Amino acid sequence: MNARNKKLLLLIAGVVVVAVVAVVIVSSQKPATGDLPVFGGAVTVNGCTISRGCSCPGANLSNTAMPGLTFIKCNLSGASFTNSNLENAKMSETDMSLIVATYANFKGVNLSKANLSATANGLGMAVGDPVGANFSGSDLTNANLDGANLTRANLTGATLTGATTVGTIFCKTTMPDGSLRTDPGQNCP
Image 1 (cartoon, one colour):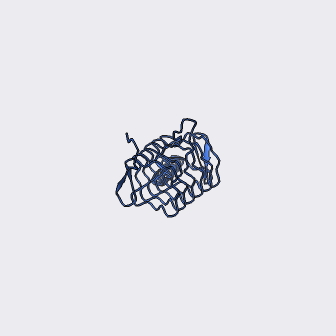
Image 2: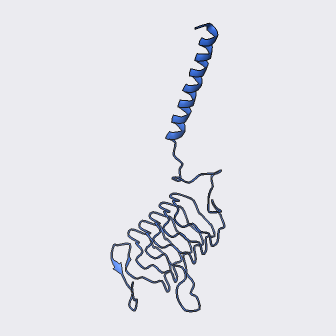
Image 3: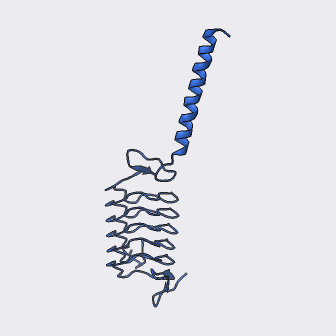
């Protein structure tokens, strides 16, 4: 083998080593938000760019994994979180009125001063339905839960200090102390 071929072989070997090292480094890094891409500190899910102060009323955020994301001071009124994972997200001071959150996971979420109220439609039925949602360990300090449907919701270990619950539906709801609550007159499914 001549000198020129040896240099070419060494150059190719060097490129291969650099490529392998780059692949190892990139594959060992995991995004802070699970499998969701992060763009400049914000995440875009179904057209909604999630960051501090975001505005995505009526957004479809169902069937998504968003653990640990920041939604502070956002407008998410009427959004759907059905079957979504928001574990340990920061959602304080966020408008989540009229949301649909059937079987959503809000475990460990900071919802202090959040608005989770549900208004009633003309038939007197609750529109916002966090039915079966997991709020265990969540901070709901001063949250507005007025009119929310908390049927089969899990509030184990949640902080409800100062939260308002006027007209809230408690039906087979697991309360912060682990007890089940069903208010009189509720026909629980």
